Picture 1 (cartoon, rainbow, N blue to C red):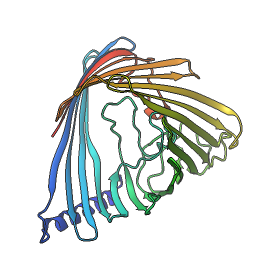
Picture 2 (cartoon, rainbow, N blue to C red):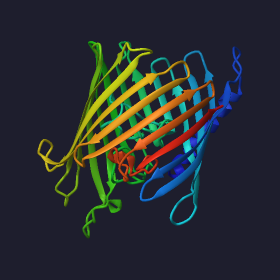
Picture 3 (spheres, helix red, strand yellow):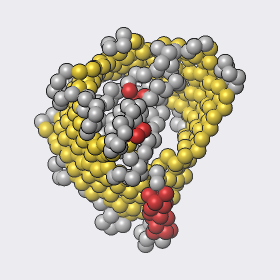
Picture 4 (cartoon, rainbow, N blue to C red):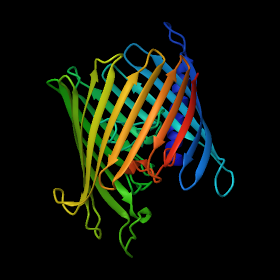
Length: 386
């Protein structure tokens, strides 16, 4: 986040706080402080045996005030986390970090909202293998579904028939996000929008985004004298229907304006379905398939990757549930298998996760080569919400 935009976000939060500090005749100021504490320990076999322990704390301050025709609210949170590698061949290694997680303020009416600051922007119909995961970076196997935010302004208007229009502008985001392999230029604004409309038994949406990549930070060497501000345009189309089973598709076409790299186009398409069977407490099954192609033309053949995912989720009772996920990388010939048992109380959640994966964990490109579920192993996670 740039210093200018961070200051603007903090200023907006301060303004919201001042407004919230003045009670209206009908109500007092609603302010809440919540947080999530999580700790985990895992033992895994990946180029030897590794024992890793970690913790995370995300405290969140929320402010909200309602007026007759509009409301104001704001949220600020930080992500404090650390890890300790106990069985590394190089000896014990510790790492930790503190960084902003969400800092945003919002003005909203019954049909319109404007949100400014460091926030989560997420949309699309797919569940696990998501071509439209453009601004989040969520591992589908992460029990907490955490992701860094993006800094920008998001506008959204909802019509009476539940059709909605989104517009956004992003600035100062210079780390890769979503499926990106090349980050955006910090000083180049990004912008886009989305139109979503109801259709019989479901909804469809069209999405667009434009940015300039920082080609100097690409893995592809930049020729001498080449302009490092490479434009990129994305077009997305998705739809979802409830016709007994839920069915959906999600597709994206990306054009990158390289002048020296021949594969300027990327295509991604996901198809999926889910259904809850009336067995016991209800067995929920979900399946998705993703095709990814990089090519010299929008509809030509090229290098490709194919992934299939199958998920089964079953509640054992009021407190316990089990979840099994299998991914098949048809291109690399790899299998990914994760089994999770979860017990949930009012404030506490416990997760026991067993996994059997390749030693390089890349369920999908956006995972960034994460190591939490690499190789074979077992992880215990404890989560407390206050």
